[in-house]
Image (cartoon, rainbow, N blue to C red; front, side, top):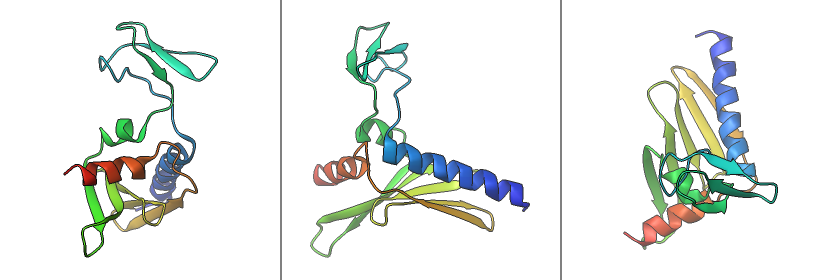
Length: 134
């Protein structure tokens, strides 16, 4: 595998870590699933198709909606501790590990890692709530 591929893998992992740390703007309506989003100056978003109105930063649940798999890390008593979320598969495999606050990318023999300091979308909180609702 050439070094250019590893660089692309690292860029992909870094971009995901950046989204977790800073949040990302939604681009499709969470209400109707495909409406055109118009972003406002005050941090809000409006759907031009169904008249939905809300925050322009995706929530942890919005992010988890596209997750391919979630592996829960729990204590011996079944208490939620953290999760590993599979967000890319088949090309590079990319996991978000909320316990270590690390994005892990794997492609053949190459690997790439990026850490994040804060979880702006509260992905970990969404995983906790999903675990507790089981």
